[in-house]
Image 1 (spheres, helix red, strand yellow):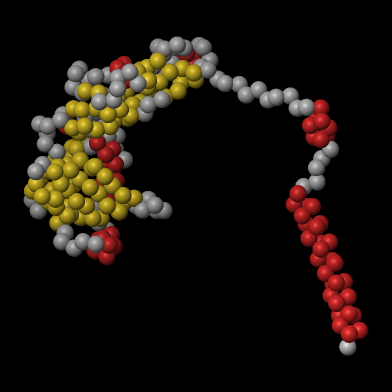
Image 2: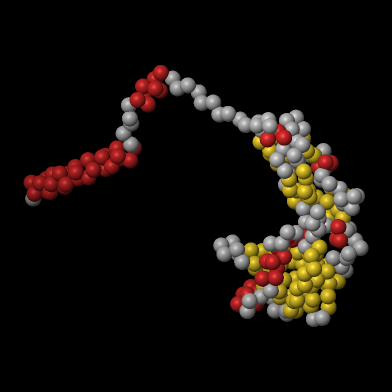
Length: 242
């Protein structure tokens, strides 16, 4: 099973300016603002290359990747804890990084991936339904899994895959999510049965109704045609008064 620890290095630049205008200038220079904190050290404002961060976010382990961050020659193990995207273009706007102590356990969420075609689908005509797509775990940084793979080929009707059935990686991870929570099961195909229409409804259906838009158009035309006549009557009445 793949782990979230890839050999990735990111070089950052310290920054002093803050605020929206300073952040805008940084983005125009091809970098984005970021902050790194944790490990009982003061937060440091930095600028990073968004291409490197995007590469990490789109890797197999995603935001759970632990990588090396270099700032003014000082190296630290860090992890992405938050990031902001531009809502329309999707470009990165800001990144929050946390320093990681490799000898201290972390709590984080990892995705659950179901592998194989269940017997309940293959021979019983059911549908595999995944109820839980990620679980909260606790482990050392070096043991973070990119995802938890589960073989569901033996799953049949009446069986439920629960958190307790997920791989524990030889005791390296501890599940914080309740182990009795269902992860997946086989469900049947639900047929939608339409009620038989009433006799009156059938007769109404047999006579095609005139579209509402057309009726509305006709009504507007008739009202519009009456307008000139009304104007003539009004003018005649004024002349008689004179």
